[in-house]
Image (cartoon, rainbow, N blue to C red):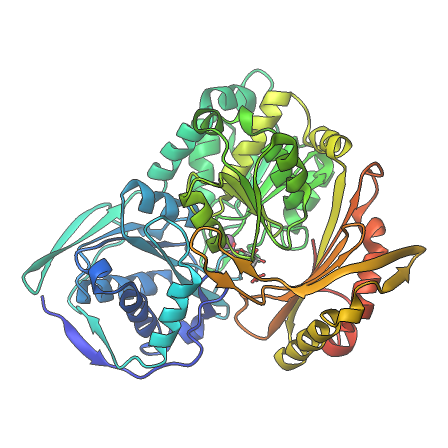
Amino acid sequence: LTVRSVPTTPFEGQKPGTSGLRKKVKVFAEKNYTENFVQCILDAAGEQAVNGAVLVVGGDGRYFLKEAVDIIIKICAGNGVGRLLVGQNGILSTPAVSALIRSNKANGGIICTASHNPGGPENDFGIKFNCENGGPAPDAFTNKMYDLSKVIKEYKVVEGINVDLNKIGTNKFEVNGKSFVVDIIDSVANYVELMKEIFDFGKLKAFVSGSKPLKMRIDALNGVTGPYVREIFINQLGATDDNVVHTIPLPDFGGLHPDPNLTYAKDLVDTVSAGDYDIGAAFDGDGDRNMILGNKAFFVTPNDSLAVIADYVDCIPYFKKNGVQGFARSMPTAAALDRVAKAKGQEVFETPTGWKYFGNLMDANRLCLCGEESFGTGSNHIREKDGIWAALAWLSIMEHTKKSIEEICKEHWKKYGRNYFTRYDYEECELAPCNQMMTDLENLITKPDFVGREFSNGGKTYKIKLGDNFGYTDPIDGSVATKQGLRIIFEDGSRIVMRLSGTGSSGATVRLYIEAYEATNVLGAAADMLKPLINIALEISQLPKYTGRNAPTVIT
Ligand code: VG1
Ligand code: CO
């Protein structure tokens, strides 16, 4: 087989966001669009990293996956890649790709997913590159990809390569006299082995399916985790079939919005509140997010989930064996974790939004457990957040404490106080007025006289301590990330944070994060407790005026 160079011209906007490039399927399906982007990934990695390299390829089963994998195989062949490990039918969860890169000492991986964005011919597709540590490519790398995409003139392809993605096994080719191998691998086996090393599956099995079986509702939302959920919860832990739902990955997620939150995982919330379940859990399209519910749909905020897991790290064998090396959370994530870190004498880092910022700290052994308010929780077992891992961590804590999820959370608040938190999302707003709002708000809150001002609402008064646009210097390599979100911090530690989403495929999504700490008043309803701060946030930002929205699309 021989390599062909195909002339092409640049596309606008091939700029990876918080986690890869996400666009409508129709855009990825345009002639040369996907080819260009994949070529730019390989060019950004550089010939040395690509020639003879081993790459992992897979995605979340959404519409256009097979077409994209086919293109990736042919372009990798054209660029001298040595071997590809491809999930059967292209299926690999994001955590599974990260695990495979690490366990195979591969040079990287290409993940085909738009994660929690809806799928299907009218919706989103996405592609993202992960590096040899298993984590999402850092900013320097994605900037390089974007720069290359603006000047690309040709891509290299081997058109004669056809692989049956359904058939597990090795496919060997010879390209320009050199070998090119495509291994179609089992999508779940490697990941399941890793989970068995991390958790005590013997204990968990007795807990889940012993004499008093646990009542679970594990909802894969028709996303990629279905086969992983079936293997782990049913085959390994002995749960019966009725404990899992929506476990067949569908190209359009069955019309569901595959985002595990109170709005989009409504079926789970309704079923768990009406039934008598010990735990409800859902994962997003590509399997890296999780939502945990207790009996009667008691909602565990991702902030609290992270803090509770941190408090109980010792009941997970992985941490017992490897020790605990620091915690981290993204900036908008509430600071519940910080209190646990302090109690345990652990370092805690505050990073920009997006999992890529945790990688360096993990590689340097400064971080072993971290999370984001956006339903992301994970550890240094891989370099992505991991939905199923989080559910298994919660089962381990329940098994260890013999307590319900609600009891565990309430005890946590009594011990540490509670960081009340809510996030308002205003999805698909018009871009220009949102940009203007952010500019105007930044100007307002960074004026020196902003500090010290007082705002009152609902009988509460808050005094400004600091206003800024969050910036971060990576403690390991010194790389700097600026403009990561507007912060308004009050004297009592309460916070208003506002930023624009970097994962949408059209328009602008405004995220407004509100946090308030209470040392003793811990059993209130978050919506009531935070109402004054929410009103103050809307007043300071003038959000309704700029966006024309009176209410958010999603509240978490
Ligand atoms: C969102 C979340 C962020 C998360 C990212 C990727 O980004 O806020 O915390 O890391 O999605 O998650 P943004 O820029 O839209 O706020 V996933 O599961 O879509 O890869
Ligand atoms: Co995801």
